[in-house]
Image 1 (cartoon, rainbow, N blue to C red):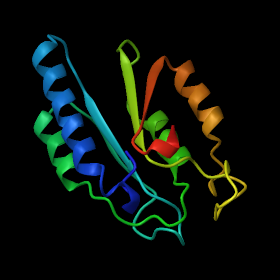
Image 2: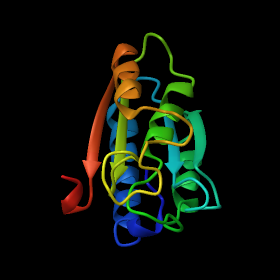
Image 3: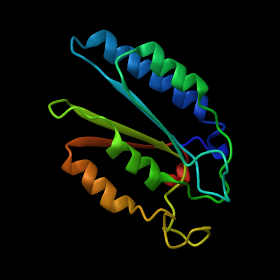
Amino acid sequence: MDCTGSMGSYIESAKENIRSIVEEIVVSEKSDVRLALIEYRDHPPQDMSFVTREHDFTSKVNEMRAWLDACSADGGGDLPEAVADGLHAVLKLSWRDESTKICVLIADAPPHGLQADDTFPNGCPNGFDPIKIVREIAAKHITLYVVGVEPSIG
């Protein structure tokens, strides 16, 4: 989930929707459901707090709630954000081989390198290519849903 300042008007709604989905999945499923959360912002000098903050899988709903409660919209800078870094962090989570794998990306801005007004016009400073990463996500049989909360991201 994008946790930059531009998400300010959306983050509470996004967090509430995640909470509702988590509750519904855990209540309706009779299987071992595990949840993870990755927060991302941007690279310095655009944001000095963090690029990504990963919370690896847990089966504890209360732990997921605590992670969500701690999320806040702050920082960022130019319009593009560290989306590629957030997606790369998805690949580092402790996915179980035989599980159904779903990832939901919640964003209001594109990754670096796709538009003119960008502090990092050549893409992610860490060299992560969002297209390659999405292909890796697909190769690992992780279904990726993208929720664009800003009309311009559509």
